[in-house]
Length: 303
Image 1 (cartoon, helix red, strand yellow):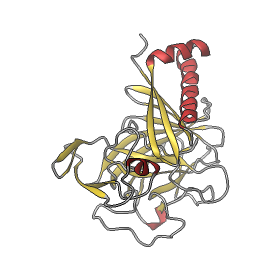
Image 2 (cartoon, helix red, strand yellow; image 1 turned 180 degrees about the horizontal axis):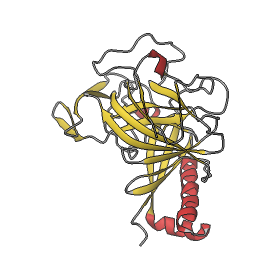
Image 3 (cartoon, helix red, strand yellow; image 1 turned 90 degrees about the vertical axis):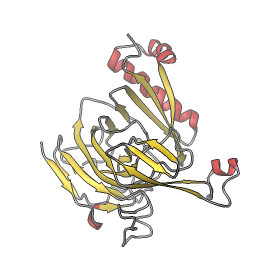
Image 4 (tube, helix red, strand yellow; image 1 turned 45 degrees about the vertical axis):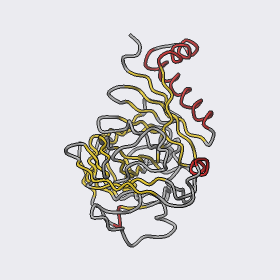
C-alpha cells in the first residue's frame, strides 16, 4: 500500500463541496494520504491568510482534496483510518460579538468579540491562552465526500456522506466509516481543531492549522450504511444530523441499534432495551446549520 504526500498549494485547496470538482489525486483502496492544511479560516502556520481565493468557491472551510479512490462506487462505504493529526503552533477561539441563535439567547451577539489566542505545543500536548492552559486532543473537524446532488454545496453542514462532523472523539487511532454517494468517493478533509468540547458551543473550537495529518482510505463492500459510524479504541459511535435535535438523536439511535444487531447479534427490541442502559447520547455540535448527535457504546459496557 502506498503513502501519497499532498502539497499545500492552490491546486489542492478548495472551500466547497461538489461532485464536479476535479480530483487532485487518485489512490488505490488501502492507500494512505498525508497533508498539511490551513486553518478553517484559510490562515497558515505563520498567521498569513492564504491568497488568491474565490469569494464563492472558497467561502467555506479550507479543505484539501478531493481525493478519488479508484473503484469506489456509490452505495459502498469508505473506511477512513485517522493515523495522525499533528496540529500547528497557534490557534484561535472566539466568544460572542456575532449573531448565532445561541449568542442571541445568551445576550452576547452584539458588542465585543472576545478572542482566545492560543499558543500550542503539539509535543507537550498543551495549549495556553493567557492564564488558561488546556490539554490538546487534535482532530479534523471535516472529513467527508461530495454530496450526490449537482452544484456547489457549503462546507458547514455535516451530511450522510460526512463533512463538518466536528466530533472531538475522532482523534488519531480512530476509524470513520462513511456512506459513498458518488463514484470515486471524492474525499476532502481539513478544519484542524486542537481541542473542543462536545457541542462546540461558541461556534468554534481551538481553530488551528494542521501541521500534518495522515488518513488511510479503503473501500468496503461488506458494510451497508446510511449514516456515518466510527470505531475508537474506547467505543463505537453512530451519528445523526438534522435541523431538529430530536430527529438527529433518532437517526443516531437507529444507527446504534443496527450496529448492535450487526456486532452483537441482538434483536432490535432487545438492543433498544439494552441501549437504554449502556448507550450514551452526546451532542456532537449545535452550530453548523444542522445539529449533530452521536450515540456512544463503550467496548466494555456489556460484559
